[in-house]
Amino acid sequence: MGRLVIDAGVGLKWFLEEDNSDKARAVLKWNDEFYVPQLFYLETSAVLTKKVRRRELDRDEATRIHHTLSSFPFDTTPDDILAEQAFDLSLLHHVSMYDAMYIVLAIGIEGRMVTSDKRFCRAMEQVGLGDWVSMVGEY
Image 1 (tube, rainbow, N blue to C red):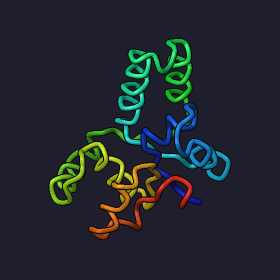
Image 2 (image 1 turned 30 degrees about the vertical axis):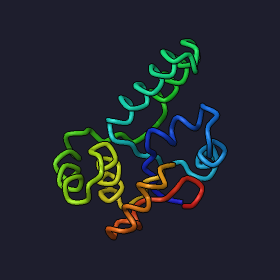
Image 3 (image 1 turned 135 degrees about the vertical axis):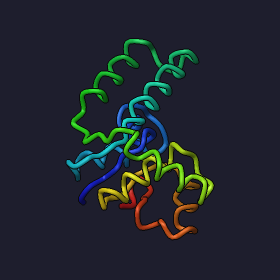
């Protein structure tokens, strides 16, 4: 399957029961080369703490998921390496800086970003960047 950039939503689906969690978990079975921007850890932590505040997840489970993701053998790229290109891509294609960080990483490693965000996938296809991003389960 090659180099896969995992976005925060997909990484969390490995642990949480959500739409397409089964497809996200399948990524783990069929690939062993995962990349993330450093931002991934902040994003996943923010979602976990929000779920605890909303009582959608207990504190112990959130802590377990946080520690598991933190120790997962991702190849992590520092955000400052990606930020300038991500900024340009964000302005040019009207996507969030967060999403731009992941797509810039995918392009840089000649891999594919895996996401569960259909709207983002369609937007990238419309601007000619569809080869760098896949919906979870469709790579």
